[in-house]
Length: 233
Ligand code: ADP
Ligand code: MG
Image (cartoon, protein in one colour):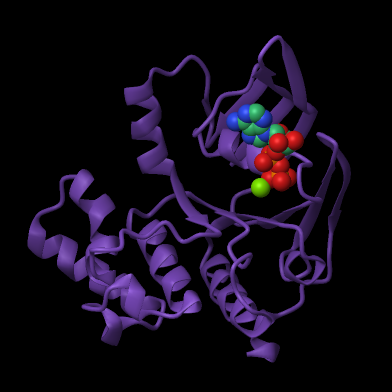
């Protein structure tokens, strides 16, 4: 699903530059649930943003579902992003003045779905994350865990091939974190390929494979005995 070879990324900082990714080799198979682990500043978000086509590498090869991702103009990149990728962020990134349902429906609007189809589809995804009864509520009326569920429903509604989550539990307490990981595990069980960036070992161990980043290089890449989040919720 994802093939990355000798990936490099630097940020220009005035006259100097910061070399953040220093030759990353990384493949993900269809249906995997992979944690990208590492301390703050190790380059996790930089890597995820490149995988998510929110940023581009300086050097290296990136293939997504057999498609080489290079030299795409912004329109083409946006099309691929909508078609292939779903995003979940630490800070939820919901629109505050829109209801849960409207938040989930927004990407479907951009996909050109008719109003009735958007509503039906969004409601079915809210039901999937256990929030059908909260459809008309604003984000400010939801708990952190509920907000993240809405964000997950929104990411899934456009039926992406890969779900990318950058510290999805970073703003949540432990119990709520495990509830969100339980949902992520269920979605993975249904076949979705998922990448979870985290700096928390307990969250990483709820994935099937842990890739450790340190100072811009992968220092470890191993299968783990997957801990089921359901036992904690
Ligand atoms: P992580 O997600 O592992 O905490 P990041 O990928 O966000 O790490 O950042 C890696 C390094 O790159 C950090 O030193 C950070 O300060 C720097 N960095 C990240 N984004 C930018 C940017 N847009 N411009 C300059 N430096 C950046
Ligand atoms: Mg980060």
